[in-house]
Image 1 (cartoon, one colour):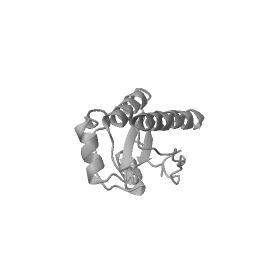
Image 2 (cartoon, rainbow, N blue to C red; image 1 turned 135 degrees about the vertical axis):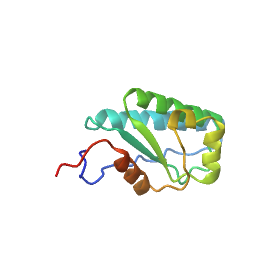
Image 3 (cartoon, rainbow, N blue to C red; image 1 turned 90 degrees about the vertical axis):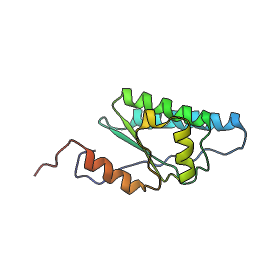
Image 4 (cartoon, one colour; image 1 turned 45 degrees about the vertical axis):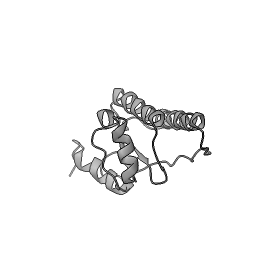
Length: 129
């Protein structure tokens, strides 16, 4: 996607839910795989992945670890993660597991659109004109 084009993003289907920790870890790993599958199919040049969290009630240590690992893996590919729709308590969970070390600042209540504007504003690319 070049600067000036409307943002394009794909929504992933939410995997089935369950309350057990083993299922939570499996869901987190499944989402990580889906993100990499989408990135591998996407055109080159993707620099940011926005993950929408409005329905996430909590992030436990396992899910936080998977998210941190995902952030490190993507950073190695020069891709950043931005989180949208975080509730205050979920942001606090992420902070408690040290996610800011890999994600940077984690503000709550940003919409996807706010995240995309933030990314566009901080992009070093210039709009031709």
